[in-house]
Image (tube, rainbow, N blue to C red; front, side):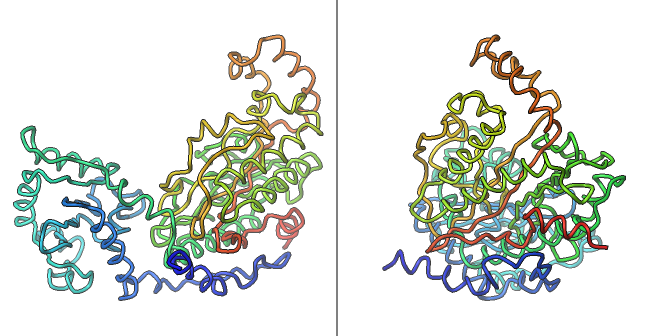
Length: 496
């Protein structure tokens, strides 16, 4: 019964999230508005953060958690963004604020405010008082900077374990400096306590991910409407990120990938400087971040507004692979089942096209399928959580094999992003890439046999990526409003 209650929120959310499972063909009715009031830290939201802190406190067994929102030197290129673990447990977005959780102290939840100076008040405005912060965020007590520094020294000399955000290098350096060599504090990573909590998304997290996806879908559709030969990749990037900001998304969740022509075959191309040409494909891998949760959606479109026959062939193959994968992304199935389903479709399709000569050759498969097709999504674009194995382990299997990985549960959100990339010099690179897996004669024979077919697709890169919420009875595509059908994309791009 407790397990059922844990996921009842998923069923309650579905009418709000859906509208319909899939929008109608050629629909432009993306449900997204500019009102950012859903980011306010009301009492309902604070109850969520308090419940998370209580769970952490129940796991501590005599110890401390010390986290910092962020220091000035670690701010994002656009604006301040709190560190993930700090925000996950507090909901606070005030720079240089510290949070301490402890089951040793009478006051289990302490906040420490940054120093107040005349300069900070002039440049950043008057900060909230300790009383206001305590009332607003439900802290047991609030300390000013001098008192906090003194208390930190006591904590570090106590000998109790201290959990820190290991990715916050400024915090780790500061705490280790304060501790010195002789202090017996035992440092651990807060992820040991929190990462598994972050795997199962609550209703607030799903709402923010859904809005991030809707904003991203709007951005992608605007590019489809505006993209033409002769424009630059960075013009499309500007349109994308301007759309993000116009709907209240503070920043991209990661560097936008906007690659055309040969750049569409580079997995993490980020320069976005090339002038697009007639006949190019434009691959976009982008995500708006809303309330510290990021979308991660990929779409590939024809710059001229219409796919060529070879482009359509590869695009449809990738789309068919993605559909097969999404069918497998259900509770009780395994994390990598979607990837395996996509791989099987891709290998069969490549073999039928004459691009693979041996369906069971690991190196031939790896030449085209470069990465596992799924990862967790949330506060990070590659979010925390145990998948049941490493990416390198998952890539060792050929079609027909099974992979033991983590079992999917309601509340998980993961991507599915199959892709095919026909690099300019892909066949020339075979000896360098697979020289240790196949002899030179085998590689040369393969290249010679597939070369005439490969030439048709040279400089073609296609990736289709969606964000999937695992529900009690299956899944929901959170990025369903981003057009992905060939006819739908072409119709949008032909609109005057």
